[in-house]
Image (cartoon, rainbow, N blue to C red):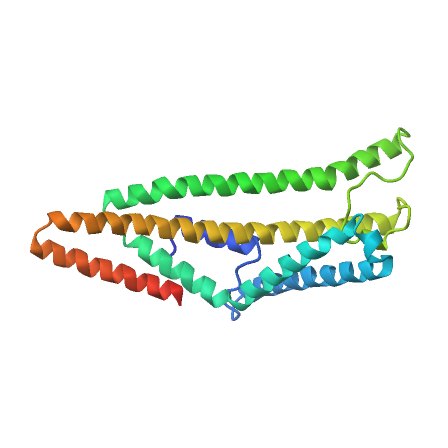
Amino acid sequence: MLLKDFMRFRIMLEITGHWYSYDLKTNQKYLMFLQLLRLLYLMVILIANIYSIYLKGLKESLKGFGVYFPMATMCIVCAILIAIKRNNMKNALINLNDIIKNHKEKWENDIFNEDTKILWKIIWMITVFFIMFFMVYTPIPLVTDVILYNFNIYNGAPVNLPQALQGYMEDPPQRNFNYYFLIFISAFWVVLGMLNYLGNITSICVFVVYLKVEMKIIQRKLISLKNVNSNKKEIYEKKLIEIIKGYLLIKR
């Protein structure tokens, strides 16, 4: 059974599209399908963005929507690599969970709680930043434009920032179904891409911080070996060997 922190981490991986370890013999197969569908969507939008660059020309596209190409490429490459290495991700999570679960002494849990508490605060701050960035980039300009236009305050070109599929809009853009549809699917792609990137950051931070916690605990145990009798020393040494074996499993 996963500890609370690791359960939270697994849920985060599911939300960000980095978790594929579902039981395909149960209703979880639909969750697996949704994760693969997310991957396909990221790939389709990348191809559409590349084609729009071809249609408009490199020079013209670099004025706006062309900047999405490197970001979209990085996003889909990371997503595919994680999908390929999904079993490694699952095994690393389970093995690290088992190691942390073996902490029985109060000082071990104190070290763990102190370091991980800061970690999750940072992850929460990054998440809030991503949400605010998205709101300022697409929904707020879109809603502002709708209000200004419908109240006859502003009748010029639509107020928006560069979108991934802007190359398929009319020039200049017109407020019609095609315009709002392209805005919507571009914004949805941005949400999935941001979630993917958030998953990357979270994964790196969690594994680095939790391994750092274990290194601190091992260091303290090694120092304490100097002050214990021979019988207890043997027990400590066995426990340290078990921990090191656990890390070797994580590496695999």
